[in-house]
Length: 150
Image (cartoon, rainbow, N blue to C red):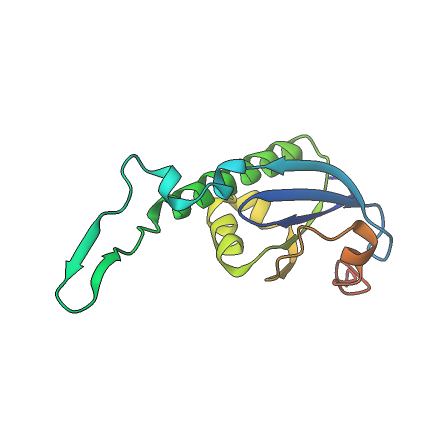
């Protein structure tokens, strides 16, 4: 098993993978995954636009959009990220995994990870840090990315 630490910083549109050779060292970006479909407005994800409803007192009002399409796209991207991580784990590219994502995407990613990959996660942050540069990003994590072995 590799001593390399991978830090995955993601949201529903972007997943950036960083590597660190040491738990207290700097991180370096090694891969970026994009899911542009998650940027598409809700109305563009469905064939028909939401209908309009008539109210006697309020006039015309757009009905609430159905959030299931964005949830579906989020699940698809989380699965893509999980597959990438499983392949890299099988290839021995890392031995420890750190995750940072907004709560909704972090939950989707947890569901998508297989048991072996999930067992390598030592730290999770429920924040959207996907747009930060490596140096700034590193300041959001503890000094040690992994706990010392007992």
